[in-house]
Length: 345
Ligand code: MRU
Image (cartoon, rainbow, N blue to C red):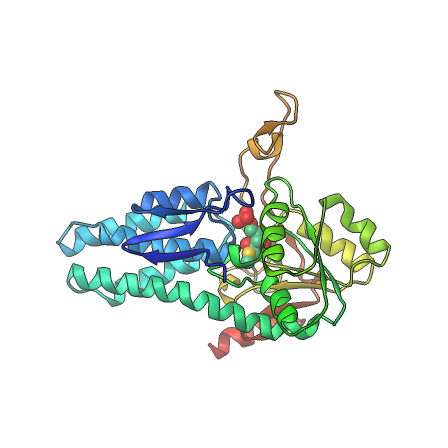
């Protein structure tokens, strides 16, 4: 199994996703600032993986706090949390993980050694549980994929976007493991090509039949009856079901509706933001222009051209056929389904 991120010998180890698929290597972060840098520069990316990286990174930072007075220790801990909170604004799992670590800190107000140990235990648990959650999510969603189906996916919502197994790719993996003959069409996903570099790599490693297409080809394939369903991940879901995901997802949802093709979101409950009622309120990260004016490090646009680079868009809930989570498959109306889910918890 692909292990995207883990704790080993007092350090955070993660697969270097910037180097994939040409080079397979891990990098070892011994300082929490290196984990922050890895999140910022997309060495590790994908909302659940970012959450896990923040949890492990905060635990790593806490191991290095030398203050012994309770207030000084607390100030240093919160400064570390702030550093992580400034990285990727759209990824709900980032803030969910930081909240979890802060809660753990509050519960563990004891001697520094105890706090450090508790924080590390909690972070490792967040990492391990992420894989288990994705497996459950995969089992819940696999019946939505018929034997012989052609599936379109966008970006990378696979093992690499999580601690392991994946969300959208987790559902696809579960269908494949069940013996279904499927084919996955992979959007390359400009500007930084998570589809071409990461999803294509993961599917090939697993032996799942995959075909790479450029983003603009999706409509043509749908029109020609080549796609049976679309399944993607999520970076943040509002309580009415509106879903932020990699830029280009909204266009796919509109195309899918036009062609009468089901459009599914697969995400853990930790991606649903109980504090945001509608997609209009989801913060959308804007990234550096270099991502757009270069391809593989080579400039492809004229010097001086204006660039706009929103990293995510929001798909309105009425274009989503179902939300696949580890607790079950949520159907519209999502407002009610999500409220019931949080009530149960
Ligand atoms: O900018 P990225 O690569 O972090 O964006 C990732 C995505 O949009 C994924 O589709 C999303 O996080 C779901 S991952 C399980």
